[in-house]
Length: 295
Image (cartoon, rainbow, N blue to C red; front, side):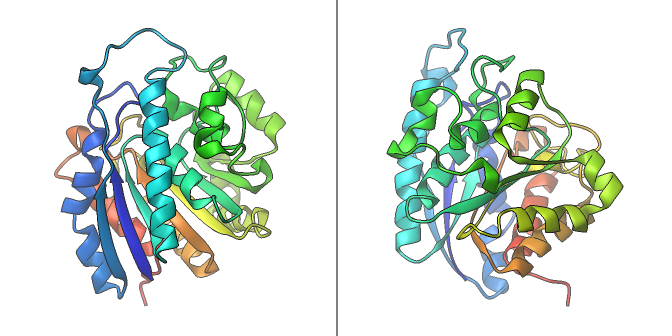
C-alpha cells in the first residue's frame, strides 16, 4: 500500500497533558521503517500546526477549547483529503481523540465510509450530557451529526458518517446521557461483555458485516481499548480491556477484509508510559491492520 502519515499533536480535547507527544513517540518506535519492511511505500507529511493549552486562556465551558479544536479539525481535514487525493492511504497519528473530527471529515469528502471505533469509551457525549466538557468525548457523536453545530458542521458537511455504519468495539465506560443517545442513534455498540461472552472474532465479524454497504472502512484506534496492564501510556485508562492478542486479531481481521481506507491511532501518552511500550504496541497493531501477518 501507499501510506501517507500525518501527525496531529493535539491535547486540547482532554484534561491530561502529554498526548500531544504521541505522534513523536509512535514515530520514534519505528513506524515508518517497520511499514517499509512490510513492503509498503510510505511518505510522512509531517505534523499539522497545533496550539498548546498554555497559549490560551482556559475558561469553564461545556465545550472546552472549542475554537482551536474546530480550527485544527478543518486544517487536518484539508490535509487528509489532500493525502488521499494523491493516492495515499491516510494514517493519522494523534494526539487526543478530537483529531478524528478532522481525519474522518477529510476521508469522507469523496467516499461514504463506515467507521469502526476501537475505544474503552463511547465518545458519544454532547454538551448537555458531558460531565467534563472535554471534546475528545464528543467526537463520534459529532461525526454522526449530534451535538453543537460548530462541531457537527466541520468541513461543511453534516453528518460525516451514518450511525448505521458505525461500530464501537471494546467499550467499557459510558456516561448515562451518552448511553441513551447511542441507543437512539442506532450505532452498533460492542462492549467488553459482548467480547467476553461471544468472543472477539464474532464481535469483529459482526462489526464488519454491519458496515458492508459502505465504500470502505475507517478505523479509529484509541489505545485505551487495550487493557492498561499492556498499554499503560494512555490518558484515560480503564481496566478490563482487550488483550495483546485480541487487539492484534481485531486488526488482522480488518486487514483481511480488504476494505481499510484510512486509520487514525490516538491517545498515546508518553508521559504516562513505561519505556515507550504503548507507542511500540501502537506500531505493532497498526502493522497488523495494514496486512502484517504471522505466516
